Length: 211
Image 1 (cartoon, one colour):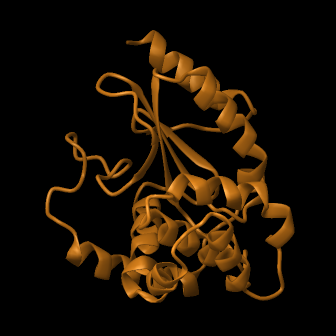
Image 2 (cartoon, one colour):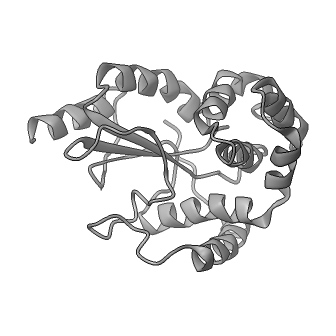
């Protein structure tokens, strides 16, 4: 997997946005052990309840490596259904023109209870819009229409500074946790080193064996 390092300009913008979002969050938002890996605002795709192995992915919807891992992740979600809690967080990389636009689209869809539908749509269509020379927000709006979202509410969410701040909030947590590339996975709060495609499953099974 190609490692991409975050550079200065975007970091400054995201830091500011993260600070704005943090100020409007309720206190004590982190989970019980104080970790920043999983927040109360984090989008949880599968919740296996107390005692489950928790997997958190920091992702960039335009990242080719995230796209390559997407079917692997979906297979693992099916294979370990009821045994793992799976959650995702935004980490848009500056080298990808549409990474932030895609994250905004996902967050706007989340406001209508359709985060996972947009999550799937973005990865399923990544080859169509990834690596564009210019941002293509109209493409993501079309996805929203295809998913049956209220387009007025979608447009309002896209324009709302809190939506960008929400994306920045995840980004800033990721930076604090040492995330530098995508996808980055945490299993039970610990960042795992990915050297092989099967390393994520190995970490999950190790967590289950330790239960």
